[in-house]
Amino acid sequence: MVDESTRSKMEELALTWRSGVPNNKELFGTAMQVAIERGIWGEGSRITKAQVLSELEYTLGQRQRAMQTNPRNATAKQHVAVLTQLHDVVALDVSQDFHHVVF
Image (cartoon, rainbow, N blue to C red; front, side, top):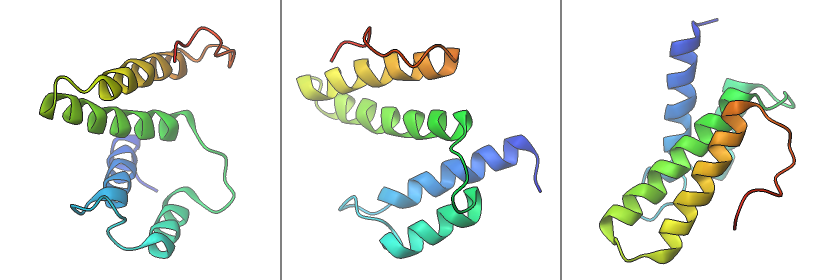
């Protein structure tokens, strides 16, 4: 057992392993990545709000970097907007009625 801050950072680190190489493939390969994630989160365990937020923040960061690299990238802008809305919904712990999210 570790404190929540350490656990959160470990989860964040595990997410970077998914695309930690230039070609955006898993750093250790799919099978090893799955084994690492099961070791951290447990096999068949329920996904926590913290895990979802961590995934969203990581993906949002990637899209924001893509948008900074190419400010005219309309797809990246749209992804950032949608991911931000989704993050806010999850963070607020509101109903799973997502019909207000604009795609």
